[in-house]
Image 1 (spheres, rainbow, N blue to C red):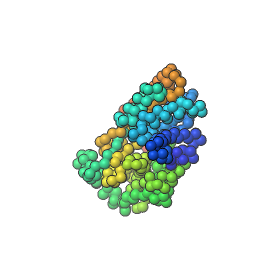
Image 2: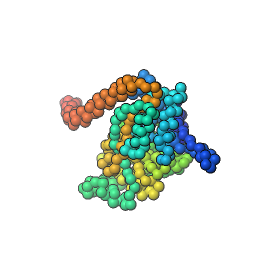
Image 3: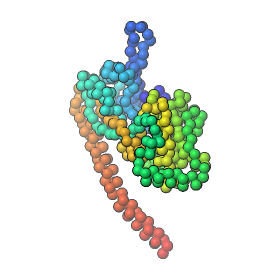
Image 4: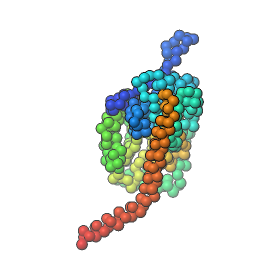
Length: 367
């Protein structure tokens, strides 16, 4: 919800960026109006809401939290005012694709109450959990307790072995010029690995590449972004892009050099990043930004952040439209999840078949 993110979306995509701002007047002191709410949305036609347009939050594929920013003392009236503004503004779509909305909190309860009180109709599409890190007094003890002694020894051994390959160092930058250089390093590193093969690297799409450069540049002006890098002989072999807002941190994106995969450089850097975040008095909690509860952070960070995907209709009463759109989306997601689970179940057998085929090809070539 930072202005830097809104500017980056506006520069990268042709879709209309919409920012809902809520203000309150202090009638007792006659002071200037005070900002009490902000919700960044983008106007787009998506799979979920097709053939209609929707207001989408998070606004794009590389944003991982759609919860509006609201003064904790004004949550209900601000949400009601935002939904009313959408309903009464003719040029705005009335469907709201609200993804990665924080749940299990006062905000979630307030949103449900406002919607039930006439703010709109809604359907729950999915609930997910992802790793979260909360500050503690002893970062090193936290990391030591995050895995078995045997695994700790294994990672320590990999760090020593990697150190034998050359000069091993960790760098942390947050100044604008250094962020610009590190951003380019990150884009190249990520584009050299498996994410590029799956077309999910930031540089795989010119729009996400433009967005990344613009967002990093704008956030760096306020020291709201940092990049931590594990370097071998000066070259990056693992990187984390960290975003900061208030007392929260977000491990936005990560990448590593697959040539050093046997040393698990990403996991080694996670140790440095975790202990640094826990030791930072300005950071109360860190959101992993993972879509699913998987990966190294899920294994090491015991706490969880619950998020929900909602479809909200703030317009006239059209229960059939909401039912059909949400039902279609749930069916698509269910099919994809079934396919994903089937793939992971069959993957070991598929790997064996590929290995046998490669062996037979090599043998035939030699003959």
